[in-house]
Image 1 (cartoon, helix red, strand yellow):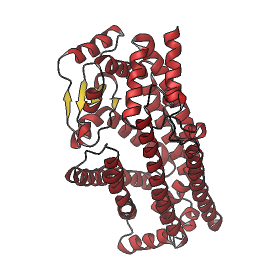
Image 2: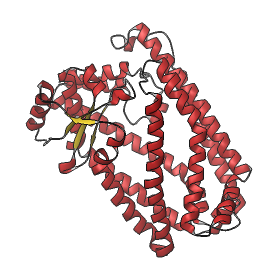
Image 3: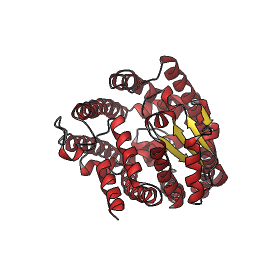
Image 4: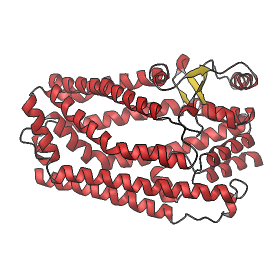
Length: 413
């Protein structure tokens, strides 16, 4: 049985890799340096050619990095790398919590080291070449150090707690672990901007002036209480623009990137904000949190059915059953279901994006939102003609042309 599970894991990994390459191929079939008719008025010929170069470069780069990761994982499985690491931690301690921390800590560090050259190249070569990068070497290093520290503190703490819950509760493991993870998820959703973001970026309240007046005026008009409007120094790392909404109730907060403010008119910025308010008004934000919690519960329930089965550890070559080896095997076996849930989540997300666009168009200005979306896409060199199958698998937002088409219907009445 263990050997059968091992081959299933190998088959899943091979299938995932081939599927990703097939999707990349389908997407590449639509690449062209000739400006399509439907994009005239959005891209000029020079900018469109640059966007195509950016898409080609990133796709090829992702193929290289994905291939290295795939080969590394296959070598770990075929050469008994997980079993070797398992025997190593067993030789140091027999405490399940310490073993899990050592096992996943070493794996995380190794994974980070393998990915480091690709991360550096992506930031300082590709993003630099296309005019996006503003990250200094100092900022990059500090980000890595802070990221590793937070991963060790938060990830290690949660892992230790989950292993302890498993040791103490047995059959009720999944339910109690679900409650703990849910509490942590809600806490981070409410306080992420207050606790984590300041470690990496400066957030300052939006200054008094025409923009703040316009935002607050719209919020009052649609019955949306909004006092927390912040600007984040996104230009510290990239010229790309963005905005996001976080928190619930009194803790809800809108964060605008300084690059977004620099590149858009007041009317366009309010339209972007109206879109974000649309998500809140339509309860997309709350629904997203609930769905995430339910998916976590499903995963933990399925995990509880198999986590104490020695066959999972044996499938990876372990001499002794353990929580950490079973968790690795389960994670690999769970990936097809995760893929399906991800596609369903993306389908719902695209539907919600249309709804938020419609809310902004009906309650504010569809033309202003359309212009904002065009600017965001062009300034970020977005690929505006992705293959429909690629969109189905990967896109959480509809392609720009589809969104513009929907907004035109609002203008038409």
